[in-house]
Image 1 (tube, one colour):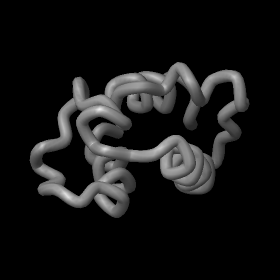
Image 2: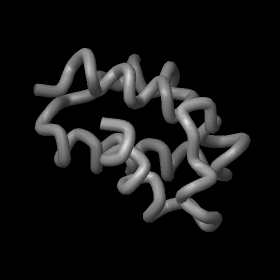
Image 3: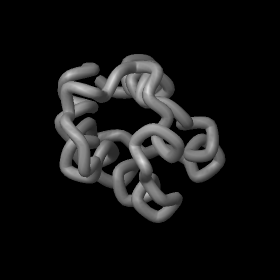
Length: 75
């Protein structure tokens, strides 16, 4: 799950994808804007065939948060 998550994030990250860790903060470390985070969440929804409620999006602050959410909610 982590590798698939990084692959999606890497398309939006200007640096080296190998720098992305579970602890990487989406905004502070990866430099993503709030709009980019929403776009990425849409990509995760398509990739993993899930729906992420709007109330959950602000809680997804790190790569690990995304991976944990996907592992609990994606089939």
